[in-house]
View 1 (cartoon, helix red, strand yellow):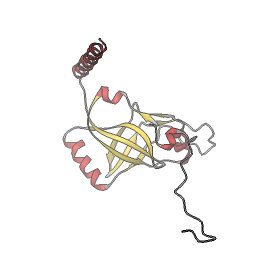
View 2: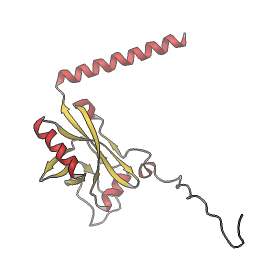
View 3: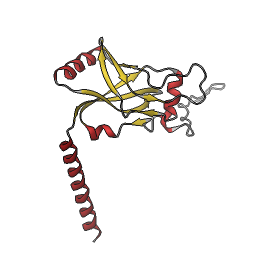
View 4: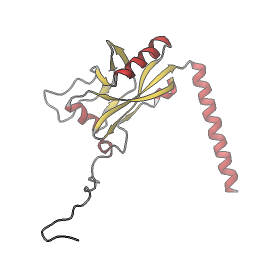
Length: 175
């Protein structure tokens, strides 16, 4: 029962449908496709990244390249090196340098765990994708072990065999 002069509350309005899909978190800002080809990706985890304002705007525009990027642990802090974030086109003298070293934000316990795995087992940290989560830029890092040339060939053979099997199953269903 409504009292006079009393407004009924409604649920929160829907998000703007015209908003950029990358900024809204519906699409990845960057994906490192070559990582799965060059490395065995063993374990993945999420990390925040410390950025400047023009870097965030460039990431929203999709100007990120993770091809040569990797992570290191130095002085109990996690850093992202060689991640190219292009200059923001509407930036001014305060625009960011594209290849600067960026700090990754993870819990101290995760850093301790990663130190053991990277130093003892010889694994590396490879960023696999950059995306938005609740308006914040996140990086998905993977603990990776490098592939030899014969490993890459074996992966390609397996992928080809799986594709041919799927095609044969699809052909048999059509008949």
